[in-house]
Length: 64
Image (tube, rainbow, N blue to C red; front, side, top):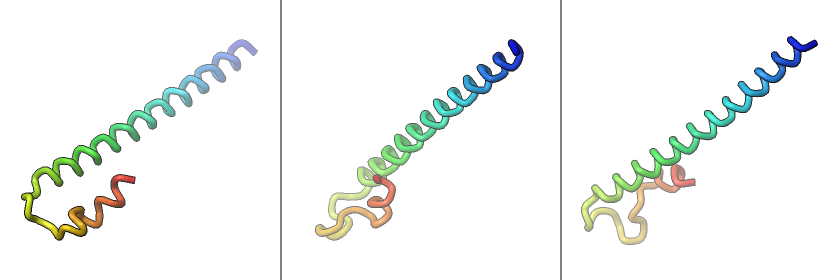
């Protein structure tokens, strides 16, 4: 019984740490996407793009 309890505790801990890891990776990915979007918009010259839609169509998808 004690052994089964330890295994269950370790499984719960593994599930928790995996969830934390996935949440961290999600945040890292969002940060990378945001950084790439800001880099791309900064690199574009001031006159590029039409005044009505300065952003690339893909930008609307990635920021959400």
